[in-house]
Each structure stands twice: as structure tokens, then as C-alpha cells.
Picture 1 (tube, helix red, strand yellow):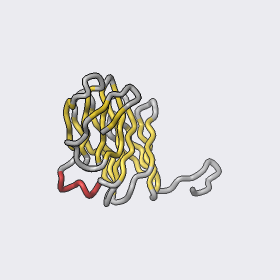
Picture 2 (tube, helix red, strand yellow; picture 1 turned 135 degrees about the vertical axis):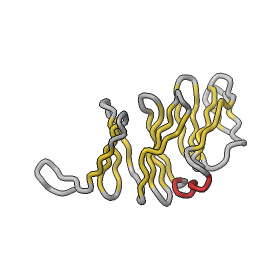
Picture 3 (cartoon, rainbow, N blue to C red; picture 1 turned 180 degrees about the vertical axis):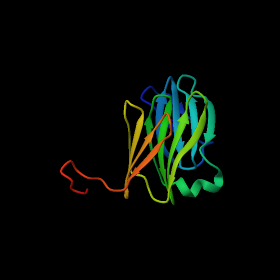
Picture 4 (tube, rainbow, N blue to C red; picture 1 turned 180 degrees about the horizontal axis):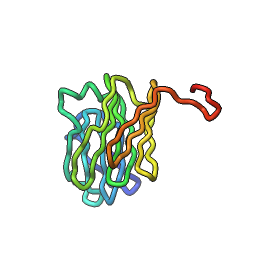
Length: 150
């Protein structure tokens, strides 16, 4: 059960897995679980609106360990890690989840820029993904302006 300072509470007993992240948008609460499921609640009525799975139950172990959610222009972007790393987009209007990147290693941090580019750090460099075109670029070696390798 989650209870806010307003004394509003949400019954989460139907949800499976570990709650890893949460965020809000337009009077809705979004809960992100280790199972890959996103569950949406109305903040006023506290009723569940819908639930969506990012991937099949056969893929759960691949991404069940950690989650990092960042709110974007039209939805939420999420890094998930387990046996693999994944970068996902949850479109709020369409209520769909899209896997934008899958790696054989973990993904560490995520930032979104005003020009709609995602920067994702990882143990082996840096990924850049243009969020509109989905164009991806991998930089395995990072250098300072002086030319030193990071």
C-alpha cells in the first residue's frame, strides 16, 4: 500500500513484482515494476486505469534487476537492467511500450536533452539516441577536449 501526505492510499495488492520506480503526469500515478509492468492509477479516484507490460514474461529475467525512469516530452523513458540492459519508451497517449535499445551489459545513467537526444552511459562508453528518428550512435571511447581518454 502507498499512502501520501494527503491521506490518500492506493491498494497495490494486485500488482506483482517489486516496485522499482514511480512518476506522475496529469493526475495519474505510474508505477514501474520489476516484472516490466507499468500500472497507471488516477490520483483523484485512486482507481487503477490500466496496466501494460514492456515485454513478455519470458524476457522478465533479462531486465528485472534495476530501473531508472525519466519523464520525457510524450511519455517516460526507462533504463532496465538484469542479465541484459534495455532502454524503453512508454508513450502516454498511445499507452504503448517500445524497446529502443538492448545490450548484453548494464546501462547506467540516462539524460534527455531539449533537442530530443538521450545520452546513456554504460561500462563500455556512451550511447546517444535521437528520440524522434531513433537513430543510435555508440561511442566506445570518450576523450576530453585535451585528447585524454576517459
